[in-house]
Image 1 (spheres, rainbow, N blue to C red):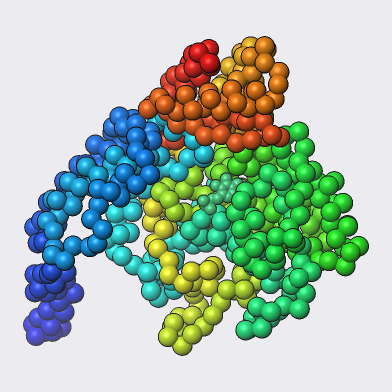
Image 2 (cartoon, rainbow, N blue to C red; image 1 turned 90 degrees about the vertical axis):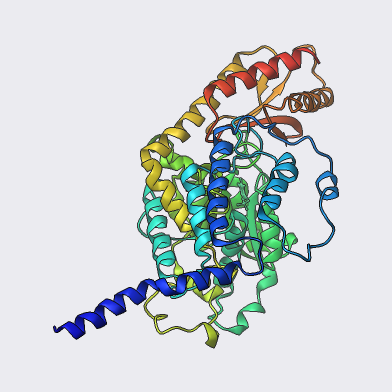
Length: 507
Ligand SMILES: *Cc1c(COP(=O)(O)O)cnc(C)c1O
């Protein structure tokens, strides 16, 4: 190599970094804003400081804001500004107007619904995702995003103890994943080959879907959206533990078959939303196998618990299933949205969702996975990054420790409730949710108990340190204490239990 060659190479390398392009490029992206490149850097640093303070002081806000409908809107202009506004002003308004109107899901006193966690590594990954601003619909539109998604979903698969026959993708929510499963089941049941005919299947109005009476509302929604119609959804009764009764399922299937209908999909729930009931997957799976019915498992909340060896039993029978979903954005410390959806048969998925317009074709298509063909939206965020950051920052052991603590504290609270003369459990406590009610021996009337517990919940929620929500189990007004927020400690659970008791005494 002579000197001239070396100069050419050096120039080529230098041009890779495009130093001469930096100022004009940056100027371009700031043009029209009130920000310049120096501001961007310093404002970003200020915001990171604010973020670190927020995380450190997560417990200092009231969990839910003291605000009435319309309060926030009344503080905002009714149309967009014509002129650029200073960023410092925007950020000040964020603190002054937005923050007091936020419900703080990452407050240690969050015992409502199920958790929607964030965590420091997940927050940082979301910053990078936003910085890259990539649209990850195809392999070529972001190769690393596709391959990282394949890798982290396979890590998760192993963590849950699922066999190698499963392949995963990230969906925005469990609701979307369940809709994907229902559409795939419909495709399989109607036996249409990939093509435009799929939409108008001859036997579509004979297809039947089964789920328990405790199934999540996203199943009703999915059944409607997937074109089965709600009258084709059978609600199967549950046993005393709020788990689907497989005998009742079998009877419903037999009845539909006798009526000339076609059972197409059973949705089993591991960890029902009201009370974390665990549908018996082995018995349900055997029935699905016998009748060749698609089995989808909705483990949106509970799936995370299966990373604990002592809780992997909740997925016994999962190998009968065709599809499986759980939400790292609920109980695996990964920012919303991040739902892990697994299937066994990618062909059915592709038959249902693939479309190949000319403008999306790439030379790599025969060799690669294009995740746009695995679900409903075309565009996809780079969501694997936050999962990768979380899994590596905590390690499997770190994640296990958090989830194990949550379950241990829930079980302790369950024991305190059982030992109390004035409170009772309304459901078993297999995971991190405790379903309880105030039940003083002097009150036996169910309606009076419902009113009493509704009043108790309202009073407890007046305390800015805590937030709980309710459900009804067999008509009984039930307080749900869901323990799964990353910053919650045992002490928070103890204080909540004290508050429940003292508040109930005053009723
Ligand atoms: C939370 C939940 C869902 C819905 O989850 P999204 O990701 O918000 O759609 C579905 N099923 C069960 C059992 C849930 O607990």
